[in-house]
Image 1 (cartoon, rainbow over the protein chains, first blue to last red):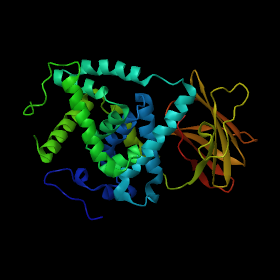
Image 2 (cartoon, each protein chain N blue to C red):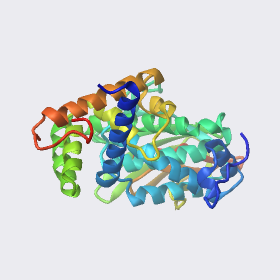
Image 3 (cartoon, rainbow over the protein chains, first blue to last red):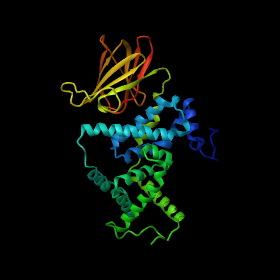
Image 4 (tube, one colour):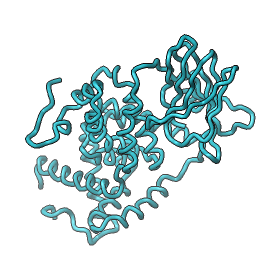
Length: 203
Length: 161
C-alpha cells in the first residue's frame, strides 16, 4: 500500500487507507488504532444489530472482535481488507453468542421484541416523517431489515464488507437493497400512515 | 417514469435518511467506543497463544466433545485450551456475584492470571494439583495468562462467558 493520503487540513489518519492504518498499529502507533476503531466500530455495531443481538450482547461481541484483531494483528495476511476480516469475525462472534443464548433462554418472540423497541425508538424521533420511516423499516421482512440495518453503518460499508458480515454474495447485495427500499416505500405509501407524502418530487 | 439513475439517487437519499435515523435511535454506545480504544492495551508480543480446542456450548461445531454436564452444573460451560505445551480445562459458572472460573492445568504452571479486555488482570493462585478458582469475574471477554514449566508465557484465546 502507498503512503497515507493527506487531505488539506484533515486528520491524516482519518484519510489513511485501512492497510496503512494496520501497518501503523503494528508499529505501535496508538493514534492509528483509534482511527481504525473509529472507522469500523459502527460497522461492527451494525452487524450485531442486524443480527438482532441485545445491546449487552452486541457490546460483548464488538469488544471480542476488537480483541481478536489485536491478537491476530501481526498475522493478518491482507491488511487492506481488515474491514472484511472484522465483518467476518464479528459475524462468527454474533452467531456463537446467539447459539449460546438459544440454549440458555427459550426462543424469544423477536417480532414482539422488535415491536416494543419500535415504540421506544419513535419517542426519540421528533420528525414525523422519520418516525414513519422507522416504523416502515420495522415492518419489513427480517431479510430486508437485516441488510438495510447493516447498510446503515456510518461510514457506509463496502459491499465486500457487507458480503462478509451477512455471508451473502456481493452480486446479490445491490438488487436486494433495491428491492428492500422499494418495499419500504410501499409500506410508507400503503401502510397505516396515509398522511405521509412520498419523498418530494415523486408524487 | 424515473430513469434508472434517478431511481439510484432516490435509493441513496432514502438510505442516507435511514443511516441518519439509525444514528439517532440505535447509536454505538459510548462504552463500546471506549472499549474498542482500550483493546489495544491487550497487545503483547511476548507470549504463545493457547487455542480453544473444545467448548461444550459449541457441540457439533467441529470441536472435540459433545455437550458435557457435570452433576448439578446446569448452566456451566466447559472449555479446553491447548498451547505452549500446556492444556487447561476451564469451567465457567454464572453466580449472583459475577462469573466463577474454575480451571485445571494438565502440567505445572506458574503466575496465572485472568485478563480482561481493557488490559486489566486479576492474579489467581494455582494449587499443587494444577487447579485454580477465580470468583466475581465481571462480564465481558476474558482470557488466561500463565507461564509453563519451561518459562514460556502463554495466553489463551479470548472467551466470552
